Length: 303
Ligand SMILES: [Fe+2]
Ligand SMILES: [Fe+2]
Image 1 (tube, rainbow, N blue to C red):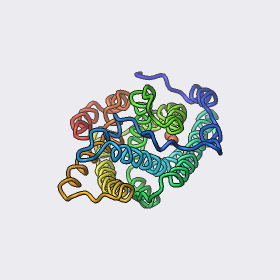
Image 2: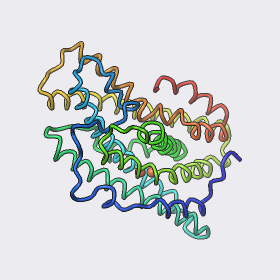
Image 3: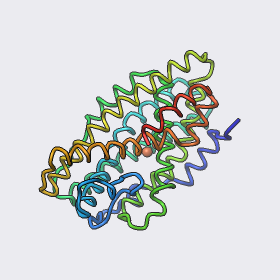
Image 4: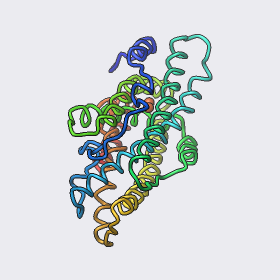
């Protein structure tokens, strides 16, 4: 066994990590728009071509806005998926039921928190930022796939939040403190979700033949292509928001160069940092070495 995750241990870890929305976003707290919101490792805005330092900071804050919306959006399909996974076995294993319902409840809290942060952002930023959606349509497209494929997407996303905080946010002293605190608190609770996702993937993969696992992996990759298309569209909306906020219209070549560079930055943020997470890779390898190798082969394109 490559891990020791179990529902009872997750339950007590979850009780220790729990926080209240009001502690993360007090009524009086304001975002500091003189600072970046996203760590450079994810935003890659300090390397954005054709922009001044001030424009790069604005683009970084727009990336923060996008992070709030994209995470709110993915959590809107994680929540019903986890409830559906819990529902067929509500009798018997009490720790399992409590852990999965706690997971869903925390995700509902995160959706609420991301929305409140979003409202605080809109108050302070001063101009409009559009985002892809609506979340229900994106969620419906993801959830129509094989549950094992969806569980793998969720596993990838939740490990991703762990590396976002530990590898990029924790040691970054320049970030807006409120945004940094949001990412820290999200990391604290997501650590338990990633373990529950691992158990969900194992339960859904159990008894499947190698061919059935590969078919689920095909669907996982299909969802990845769908999400990547959404990320590319989001980059275009981010650049529109940058132009609106700064009052400068980019030339066609400038826009194309920025779009390409930022598309790769979003790919790394929302796909590559999860696809390459060692814990995600370990779950794939335990399920099917061939599935692990297929993902390892495509991952560099999203880094
Ligand atoms: Fe979450
Ligand atoms: Fe989560």
